[in-house]
Amino acid sequence: MVSLLDETRDWFKSSVGVPFQESPAATSSCERYFHTTKDLILVEDTAKDPLFAAHALVVNAPFIRLYVAARLDVDGRTLGTLCAYEVKPRAISAAQVEHVRALALTAIELLKQRWRGVA
Image (cartoon, rainbow, N blue to C red):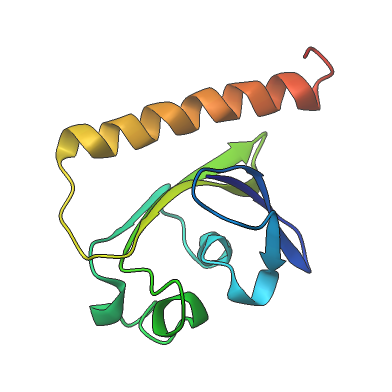
């Protein structure tokens, strides 16, 4: 999923397996990026993580357990994330983490082109 966050909502600009196109910012996992300097967040079991355990999408449907997300930063502005969810906790490999990073870099380049009027 590629999601962009503003003050009131999380827009899902590109997604697979998500039946809606936006959610309130209050229920966004993407919002975590406004409180950290990390460029990647990996939580292999959200139910055991203090930052995610009480999150609405962890304790209620769809009961997200795995969350991995890379920051989408354009010219020093965090616009959102490229992220993946899973309903079962699981480990992901270093290669899979690098795939997430690579996809995020591609999304960032496309956002930059759009931002600057190239695309």
